[in-house]
Amino acid sequence: MNNSDAASSMVRLNIGGKKFCTTIDTLTQREPDSMLAAMFSGRHTICQDSDKGYVFVDRDGKHFRHILNWLRDGVVPTLKDSEYSELLREAEYFQLIGLMDEIKASLIKRKEDEEMGTELTRVDIIRCIQSERVRFRGINLSGLDLSKLDLSFVDFSYACLKNVFFSRANLQCAKFRDVDAEASIFHNATLRECEFTGANLRGALLAGANLQSANLQDACLVDCSFCGADLRSAHLQTADLTNANLEGANLEGANLKGAKLTNANLKGANLQRAYLRHVNLRETDLEGAKLDGANLLGAIR
Image (cartoon, rainbow, N blue to C red; front, side, top):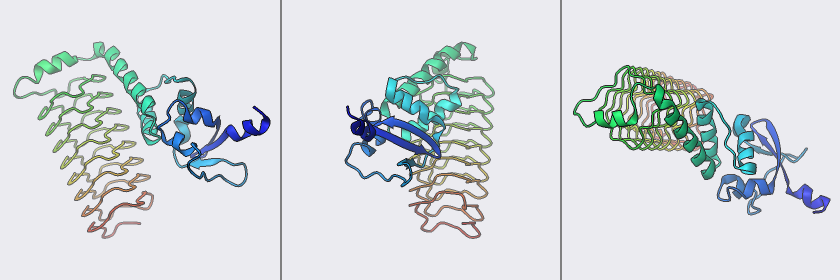
């Protein structure tokens, strides 16, 4: 390869202010169907700054080095569960399907390793839910894999649910009052009419979840991902949604009175007929959001 070919294959990236150098091969070969591969496939025009030719991507660059290492070597780093959730959100954004699968596999294995320290196992839970009224109030279930189970109407109030894997579980009308569910995964779960009053869901993944008419009043939803989630008629009064990702979420008729939305991403969200009176929207990304019929009286924009 001559010098001009080498230069043309090099890519300079500015990810939210953090700068990286890599190659087109790295960005396109391991995950050919990703957003990054599409960007540098040659089919699209890339905007570069006029100074040093950096391509700017408006994302947090904290974990982008892990993404590059995955694309180079196929290696998933060892991280804290909360950091795995952050990396999973970035992989979701860049459409890195292989990385998403590997992160989920790593989380499941870690949960299996941690099950020995919990008060109940997945098998115990399955046995319990065969009875009519199930209550796990105040129980430590952290790290369990409860994916795809029918847990509707179960009472988890005051339980420790850190890093629990609830993906695709049926949790309709379940109670999560004052639970600690930090970094738990509710991806594509059914959570209709659930109660999360006062719950700690910091860093939880709820992308694609059905939260229609759920009660999330006073909940800590900092850094949560609600991408594409159904939050129609949800109760989010005084919930803390700082840095939450609600891109493409359906919040039609939701009540957000007193909610904190600092740096929240509501791009393309449906906020029709939502209650947003006196909510501070100044640092909220509302690009492409639908606000028809929303109550915005006194909202700060």
